[in-house]
Length: 174
Image (cartoon, rainbow, N blue to C red; front, side, top):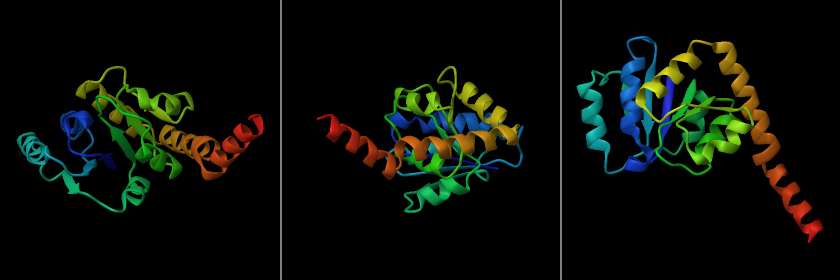
C-alpha cells in the first residue's frame, strides 16, 4: 500500500499531521509505505519527526517531482492533511486517475465530497486522519468505488470538455 501526500512543506499543508497519522497507521498496516512529495522550509523538521516516530524506513520525503500525476495514479490513496486548502489540482489529478482521496475537513474539498469522490475526516486531528486511512485501506471494494466516482466526477465537472461546455453555456446566456 502506498499513501501519498503532495504539497509544499509549509505550515498550511500540515504534513506534520500526516506524519503523525502515518505513525498510527504503520503498526496496523505493515504493508503501508508513505510518500510526501514536495519541498519547503519544514523538510528538516518533518524528517526529524519521521525519524523520532520510527518511520525512517517507511516514509520518504521525495522532494519536488515532475511526475506527480503518475505518482498519484500509482498510489492506493492520496491524503491531504491541510489546515486550509482551495480546490486542489493534485486531488483532481488523483481522482481522474481513479485514486481515492482522503482529506481533513477543508473548504476546497467541499465540491469533491458532494460528488461522492472524496472522503473527509470529521476533525483535523492526526488520529482522525489515521482512522480514515485505516478504514479506507481495509475496504478495497470501497476504494475501487471511490476511484470510479472520482473518474466520473472529474470527467463530468472538471475535464476540458466540461469546461468548454460551461463557457459555451455562459456565452449563450450573455
